[in-house]
Image 1 (cartoon, protein in one colour):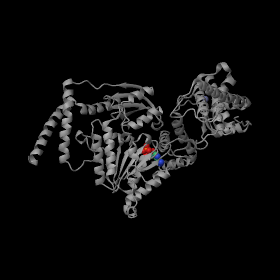
Image 2 (tube, rainbow, N blue to C red):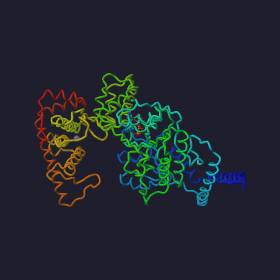
Image 3 (cartoon, rainbow, N blue to C red):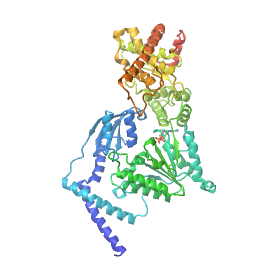
Image 4 (cartoon, protein in one colour):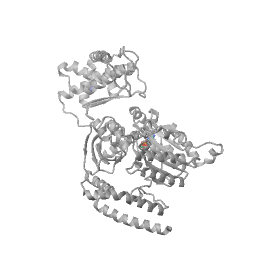
Length: 623
Ligand code: ADP
Ligand code: ZN
């Protein structure tokens, strides 16, 4: 047979396939069904275009930010109702594409006690569905042969049509003007230095190869979301002025065996054609998960995809300038083979920024915003330990939105503080009616504040407010003193005493019968701290024994359990007594501050300290 004939035959097969496929289109075969369904989803729920990757969604689950989940297309798509600090704590509907093989999702949802509902796909004719199931592979196979024979040039926005199914879905930017430079990144200096070196390699590879230096093929960025991993990758592409491919790991996770692998192959083909260049794979754990670890002993498709990735990374023995940057925050579940030398041989940890880092990041994001002179970024950084770069960017953005809402030309301290309050504590409600309840809450909060301010080693009061926020009726905030790294025993005790002091004040002022349910959260915190002191930090009479840790929680006999409980009680009783003494000793100033607070509704730290300063408050030791 001559070549021409084969080609004609292929075209013939393809034409027939197209015909059948056309019928499928009309009668809704599986693949098309999904797309139709997707469109329906968007109309149905009026969802803004917001989407979230599956990995991100899992984090949201863990953080308790997910309120409700609606599953569509046999659990391939979901609309998630969530609210989180990065969404400004407003509930939003977000679309999540769920990778095949994530069958443990339902289990998870039950575990986290999340309201979920599965919406069945509209029923279809049985005959057609059988026919389409049989025909579809044929179509793809013939379609793929045809296309692989005929198309040498790749299209840039691939992956969107069924004929491009084996093409990499990576977004490609030949001359990335991401606009992001190293100057836009702060607080992660170590990672930056590492990347600056890679830029210099991409610019002058000879300098390195001349002295026999091997260039890393893969760099793995490990860290929690929002810490600037994507930002780093964009910055190196921009600074080195090389092409930039960007793709999320979950985009390789597919239903048909071999497709993910084909996409990987395609991605690396394109990359080596465009070398030197950068390939950025976000959430690489979606493909790089340890093999054989899925439900039912693993997932063939994913394993093939991962194997392909490993092969490709081995493929370029001499690095001609394709640098693969992977990002994940779950390095623990990555297949060990990925981390071997010659693959992702550099691992860079990108952690949450420390205080100085936060100042730097705030400065970066304040650059294009008119800030009033009274705004102190240093103070803001003090208030926000545990915030990621994305959280901080979000905070300043929120402040800018507030300023616009109040029709101000510049952003003042007020807007910045309000934005921080919102993100830390939730959106403020309307203030309470002047009732006995309000008075009780005022005493409760002032109790916290006074105890916190007289205890040695306790953080300073930042603000007391009677304006309800995020479920709490009133709030007392403290400025975290330094990085919350190591805490001493006396600091832990001080925190317990301060936390108990709210309820203790209710008891002393209103009598034991009037104590309310409002302190349940306080009590939970107190119990947690005391328990950890006993079981993790060896800070009780049981001695320096780790009875619990993250891997093996609570596994001891009744006798030991009893002892633990009695030690926990001892700590809490002691602290309650100290709290009582503090409140009784300072009753006069407490009454005075309560009146002031009922009047003003909010006192900031300075105002509070001013009031306290006029009276002598006895400094108190915790033990
Ligand atoms: P990741 O990829 O680690 O999840 P991103 O790089 O996408 O996080 O960060 C999201 C946004 O947060 C960035 O676009 C930037 O505005 C801000 N951001 C995060 N980290 C930093 C940082 N170190 N310096 C400046 N801005 C940051
Ligand atoms: Zn309280």
